Image 1 (cartoon, protein in one colour):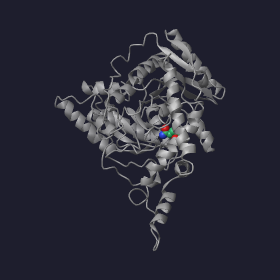
Image 2: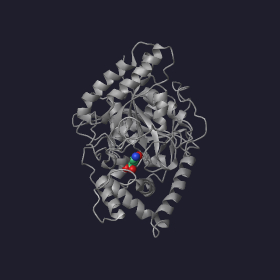
Image 3: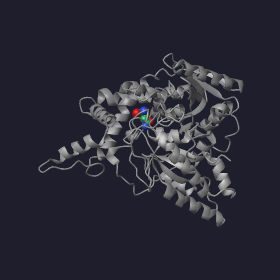
Image 4: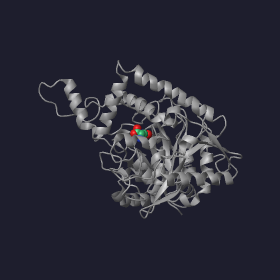
Length: 488
Ligand code: GLN
C-alpha cells in the first residue's frame, strides 16, 4: 500500500487495515529524513500529530466513523493559522508567533479525521515565486535539489511531490499554489474565490487570496477541497452557495469537453520545451474526444502590471498590523524614542526586502496623488480581464495552457524582482477574475541530466470547481507516467 496517498490512507484506516498512528509515525520519519535535503517544513509537529492520530484510532476502535480524511497527515503552509506549533509566514516578524486558534479550513480537516503534521516554508508572507526568500532558508525542488520548487507555497509543493505528507495546503494570491505544483510535479488547485474560508489565513491580497490543496492526485485534491469548502460565518466573503461535490462524477470524463486555448498562452517567450509538452497534452485530449477551441485573451500580458498594483495595495493595508506593538517583532526601544520610530525600526528588522518593496509599492499606488492613476486604473482593468474570461467561456468549458512559462530554475537565477514577477504571467489573471485554476503534471523536460516536471494549467468559470476537477482528472488519466512522486 502506498502510505502517502490520502484516499488510500483513509480507506485503510477506516477498514482497520492500518492504524492512523502507524501512518503518521512512518510519514513523519520519512519527512524528517527528507527535510534535511528539502527544507520543506519549518516545523514537523510529531507529538501533536501522534496525539491526533491516536484520537482517530480510538474513534475507529469505538466503532465511530473517523471521517472522510481519517488519519491523513496534512502539511500546512505556515501562513495558515494552526493551534499547534508556530504560524510564522516564514518571516522574522512572526518568529515567535503562536496562533490561539485554527483556521477554519484546518478545523474542518481535523473534524474530518485529518492530522496536522507540520508547517511548511514559503516565500515571506507568500510574496514570491521561488521559495528562496524564506527567513528559515530556501526550499529545494525534490526533482533536483539545485533548483527552486517555485513559490510561494514551495514547501507544501515539495512535500506533496516528494510524498512526505498525505496532502498539503497552500494559498494562492497570484499563482502560489499552481506555479510550485507545476515546478514540483504535483496537483495544485486554487478554488473559486470565496469557496474556501480565508479565516485564519494571514491576509496578503484579500480580494485575491484563496486557500487550496496540493496533492499527488486529482482525487486527493478534490477530497481535501470537498472537506474544506463552504460558507463560513467568520469569513463574510465566503460564498453562500452550496458546494457541488467534486468527487461525485470525478471519474466520469466530460463528454465533448471544449478546451479553449488562448493564442496568447502559447507564446514564443515560453521555454519551447514547455510549449511542446502542452501541445502534446492538448493532442491527447483531442484524441480522447475533447475539442480544442482557439480563444482570445488579449489582456493576458496586462495581468502582471494590474496584479502588481492591486496585490501590493492590499498587502500594504494588511501588513500595517505588524508594527511590533500589536503583533510581531519589536525592536528594542530606546529612551525618548517616538512610537513612530519604534514602528519603523521594528518593520525594518522584521520584514525582508521583498515585503518592504511591496509595502512601498502599495502605499505609493494608494497615495492621494496617484490613487486614480494607478489603483483606480488597475480596478478598471480588473473588470475588463473578468469580462474577457466571460466572453472566452461562451465557447469553451475550460481554458488550458502552461502554469509556468518555464520549468524549475536555479536559486539566484531570477535576482531581478521584475523577472521573478513574470513567472506568474499565466496565473495572476485567474485570481484577478476570481475563477478556479488547477495545475496537473503532464510530463518532464530533460535538463542537464535531470528530469524537471511541467504542469498543464486549466481554468474554469467561477463556481465550476467540480467541472474543473473533472477535466483535471481527465488530463491526469492521459498522463499516468507524469503523475509520480519525486525520487527523494
Ligand atoms: N508570485 C506572486 C507574488 O509574488 C503570487 C504570490 C501568491 O500567489 N501568494 O505576489
